[in-house]
Length: 235
Image 1 (cartoon, rainbow, N blue to C red):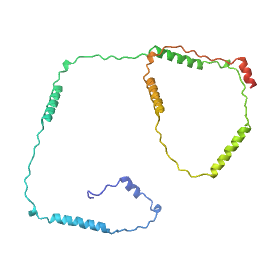
Image 2 (cartoon, helix red, strand yellow; image 1 turned 180 degrees about the vertical axis):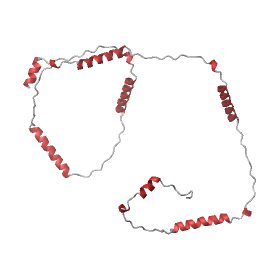
Image 3 (cartoon, rainbow, N blue to C red; image 1 turned 180 degrees about the horizontal axis):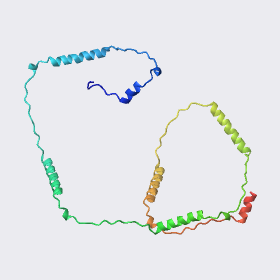
Image 4 (cartoon, helix red, strand yellow; image 1 turned 90 degrees about the horizontal axis):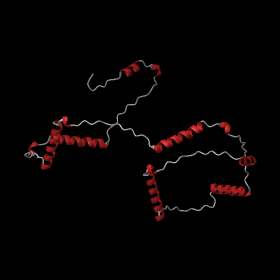
């Protein structure tokens, strides 16, 4: 086997050898021998002429020239930069570690302030009140299903809307119009309103929570009075 031959996967060879010839489909093979086009022939001819010109070139037509080797020396800035880098590396390599001072690291744990603790306490009390709520304190109320029929004006309005929809679907009495795209710039009032909104958002973002005063929240859950219950039953 030559070096250019590709290695075949053993699993492919095994699958080919174990294939059932009865399961194969008959196909007709077509031999194609396309001739080169006119452009391909012209390109091949031009390439061959170029190779012939290179191989039969007369070396006596060449002129002798002397090559000059130029060595570009670094300028003052590059020399100073390289000198500074070298001094820095030398200082790092020869640095005395005994000159360093030992520093103890302190781990700080930020505790919540008074406002955060009060807010968390209020939230816990609210959740505890919801979880431990006694359902027996609730009173049974009957719901009444009311069906409101449309009046004469609603029926007339619905009729006009249906008529309008039918006329739109049929496209009756429509005239061709040309659309014009307007891109109006905001006026002075709109710019001022947008500016006030940006200032308002900025004041909310930069608001100092320390300026807030602590306030105790009271949860009120008033039950309906006897008159309200009777009115609800009559409704």
